[in-house]
Image 1 (tube, helix red, strand yellow):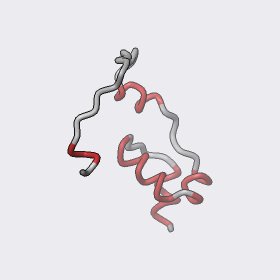
Image 2 (tube, rainbow, N blue to C red):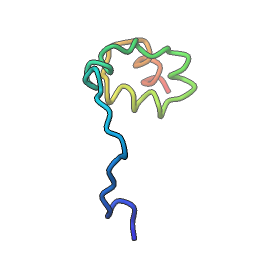
Image 3 (cartoon, rainbow, N blue to C red):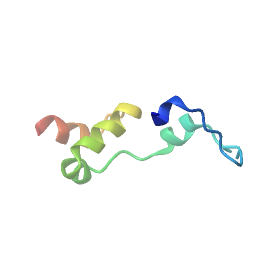
Length: 62
């Protein structure tokens, strides 16, 4: 049986104090050095939280 075919519920439900969108918007721009070392992760981060930063220039130059 595939794991995604069953519905699992957590034992304890916890409330998230701030919405996920607010947490994503609170992140700083990714460091260009980190973006050069981790291009896949940087692309994923910029896909979720697009920003005009130096990391975009580094990714375009790769």
